[in-house]
Image (cartoon, rainbow, N blue to C red; front, side, top):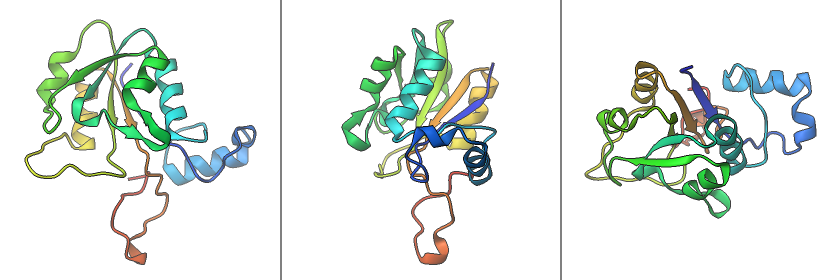
Length: 170
């Protein structure tokens, strides 16, 4: 069934035992706008859990330009392999188009994965799908889309002169 999944670790709560209480789950839903969620201690854990649950033994389509190392020296291809998901690279390091994803879909595709560039930027001769375009593509080809959002900015920081990241809700 097509849909959107957002994986994101959080700095609000570090204890998983607390995360299942209604008060914290309500706060998480209110802050992020998500239907529901679980709270884990880092993004690698969120990615691992999501891929294990949704893509074990199946293909996950991801742009070559998004095969990055996330916090704690966790590399996306390594986390994917540990989850049992099968990495299917598309595009090139600097450019990935909608047709790259469309051509990669097979009967063994579980989902499309997008990694947000929260702590690095590629500039110059580059092209990537916007999040909205990427989500529409997932719906059009009827596959789940999973966005790895590592920034965890829960409030708009522009009033404080910080214009780097959009909030998780956006």
